[in-house]
Amino acid sequence: MSRTVQTFDLASGVKIPWLGWGNGSGQARNVPVQAGLIALKAGIRHVDTAQNYLNEGAVGETVANSGLSKDEIFVTSKLPVNEVRPAVQESIKKLGFIPDLFLIHSPHVAALADLKKTWQVLEEMKDAGELKEIGVSNFRPQDLEVVLDGAKYQPAVNQIEYHPYTLAHLEPVLAIQAKHGILTESFGPLTPLLRHPTGGPVKPVLTKIAKRVTESNPSLPIPVDEVVVLLLWTRAMGVVAVTASGNEERIKLLAEISYLPENILTKEEVQEITSVGKTVHFRHYREHMEKDFALPDLPDGTT
Ligand SMILES: NC(=O)c1ccc[n+]([C@@H]2O[C@H](COP(=O)([O-])OP(=O)(O)OC[C@H]3O[C@@H](n4cnc5c(N)ncnc54)[C@H](OP(=O)(O)O)[C@@H]3O)[C@@H](O)[C@H]2O)c1
Image (cartoon, rainbow, N blue to C red):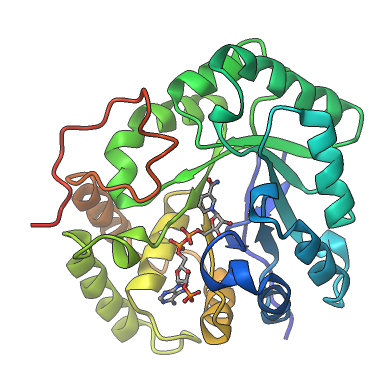
């Protein structure tokens, strides 16, 4: 039976699968071809890579050997430096195609004053058909404002560490993105469960909801645990989840999650995860977003 990929719309109307499989972390980074082939065969249709992960070539090889047409797979890559044109050309050469989405990996690739120019080169390349969708990653409010000022194209996405424990800090970023129709992509969506020392106050809420969903949906194709609920919460927030795995069973599970129908979580459950999450600030990837961007005065949720 054919399954329909579940997607969000970018501002341009281009569709992006709501769950992406990244090869920039964990075991997936070490065995990107093997894991990538498992992911595509299992049904993953969104692959997240970057020049910095040193495996764009592996993505090209995976896509070419997948038995799928490139058009069926949404691929993102990212710019690590401020020499835009040669870097884009390098990505395209390694991938073997123009990525569907190309992001400035971090605002720190250029001084704040030079970010505008970096964005303008990406806009020119998009106009020339050398790039498709363009966006940003790890952008703070001040970075978004610089790029948006007089922009021909707004960033399609901002890929940031997004989960319940970054919500309070991200409020000003999310407000700008809502105003300009910039889709949020979450990396590190499983951080509350995998990287927070105790799981914090959201963990028992996820456990309770997983039990409720399991009991009321006996025909779901996969067991529903806290990981599944946290990814479904990300989707319910209108946010793309960029997750990862190098483990065959877990890759297949992620693929199954990506095809689950909407509205498995109730509005009240989504709201409970959100409001409990906002009582804590905890971030794993700290180097980009915590510089010159005031932190909320909140506990880290370890006690
Ligand atoms: N733009 C940026 O600056 C930036 C920064 C960080 C990450 N990223 C992108 O986002 C991707 C994901 O980042 P992340 O690793 O932080 O995401 P994450 O979703 O928080 O964590 C992924 C980890 O979760 C584990 N996992 C997956 N399914 C699981 C399950 N069912 N149960 C338990 N554990 C499970 C995997 O470990 P196993 O391999 O052992 O299954 C994997 O290492 C990266 O690969 C990269 O593409 C971007």
